[in-house]
Length: 261
Image (cartoon, rainbow, N blue to C red):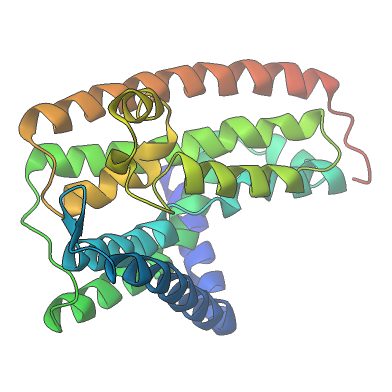
């Protein structure tokens, strides 16, 4: 297998990300705005109470700051890459090349995320240095969980992207994904504020693995057994969506006609 080709794809997408500096700046500004809106809502709530189900105002500030940082890395933009390629016929150029489209997409995905990841680390260190958030040292098991969740995000996006062979317009999926992350991913509130039965049910879905679980991990709130449980759950979803992607990809190629190529 020619891994050099995948490295070149990664490097090219890294350079492309660097060339669009305004996208980086606007992304940071949007993240700051989202943080401010969330914090204003919760600070208003904390004006009438000292804690909300064991969350103090400091805990909540830390949660939403980390939520915004995690949200940058676990964004959904890669879902629509295949959509553009199918609609324009550019997929033909990739299919005739002697390497895996999935690994091509993964190299593209990693390359486009490196700037976001670096920006996230820089902001996280800044927030930590001024005392606005805290996190603990990450164990090997916790690091494995973060990497597995990140890989799951890619496979999940690839699975959804494969629907491009059948759907003309994929943009509604972005709104749906953002809504699911807000409700089930912990972007609007920590999931453990919900009644226990609802929280347990929601945590069986993949969305908490893209948000809530990673935030609580960085806060040092996941015990060993919880970390192991979420790792197993993440692997199970990874297998399910990998199989689903393979099925959709094979069936989609039979339907694909290379329009506009």
